[in-house]
Image 1 (cartoon, rainbow, N blue to C red):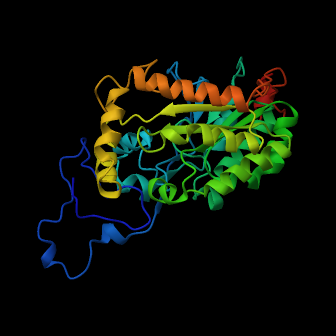
Image 2 (cartoon, rainbow, N blue to C red):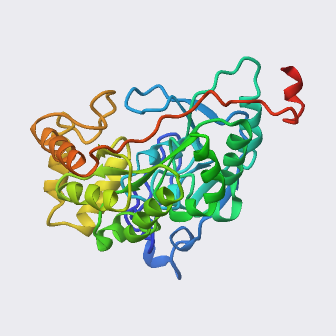
Length: 356
């Protein structure tokens, strides 16, 4: 890893090596450069991709929905802990700064979704936006791919679940309100910490905690069921906040709550370790040791059934904290189920309605 790259306003401190590439960019003799590396000062680059399919099967039993759709790859939010960073290497980039600066957008996603839903014999089942990176990340403000996807879901009366940490979702209140009127959508807003100073370091390009709580309140006031996902719970850093996060979300009107424990798969372990030792050196060993403790002695855990919630005494303490707080603040509240009975294929859907 080239330790000399540092980008103000970004989450991680450097780029990891891409295991699929033979060459890597390093600074061998920085004293010979008249100005900083171009890589260290560049802005976000948006790359247009045109995949053949966009709906993906989710095989993990740890995830409630079986299908996901990702309008973007890479994420400018820059969350240090993001498990999706590893997937960026398949595109030829690093899981580090590249993940935050090189964003792939799929403008043909709405057309591909329409084609997918219009297949003969298709049986509707809720699709998640997104399974990998945030569908309301900053690029969405201009590109509006997620909004066009919601228009397709509404057109077909098809259920969709959304998880985001961005208040940009409120731009689409009109579509979400109509989807909710048919019981076709549910939203989970992700909150990792209530500490703004920590939030700015951990998730540098995300909305404030105040705005996220306001988003939960606004969605529910508009009849759109919205809950909170306290994720990830970081041992020794944010774990003590779990009850307070649930209370704040419940006070804002959240109808459901969930949580996951931090897991540092692949190169995310290297990036997070560098970050915690730089930003919180006094707590670094405690955080990393407790994270390993809940994952069988390793920072990286990919085992279904344990990777999200961990195992062992410390993981049990977190689970009990969550269950007690949920019982106290969410008693009688629940996220309504999805209605799959209203699905239809519009007759003017690119001629596909003629098949029916």
